[in-house]
Image 1 (cartoon, helix red, strand yellow):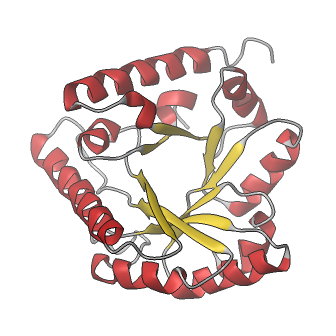
Image 2: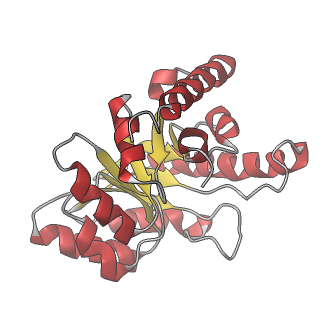
Length: 239
């Protein structure tokens, strides 16, 4: 297995270099940008290699896969991010260890997280997922209800809202300027929502993270204010 995932170090260096370049052009500090390595479908050895190269934050879509991997790294410092849709019946499994849940999109899900977190006296950091692309197949609350949802969640003692997340519209051609403009609009809408919610100074809410941007569009996301990127194939390779 030694050497099999050496390319991950090179990919991480390339990503960080490109993030630095985009930040420089956009007048932003690259130190503000968190890179979440999306490790779904990749084996524990690949995660271990990324960890060895000082990548601490990892994103998983499916709870079952996350649980299997979490047991492999209990002796290491690692931050697990649940970035996929979370079903209420799976909440109890991740509450003991998850670092950040990116995909809270309903009051019902928040109530379940509160209930399970209270049982073990843990505060769970969450992002409210907003569907800015309007695509039916995507989860996330309607943008017009985001502020209301954040206010409702703020009443829970065992949940801390830390910001917002969205997934931009999937592009068929990543170089097409018209498609990129649509994605930019998705990200800009989330940034505006983020600033609006922040301006309300809601007690118990800390608007710190704006999670938007993946391998195909993270440069646009940085330009539009993202500080948390979810990068998979550009780090681990094609699935």
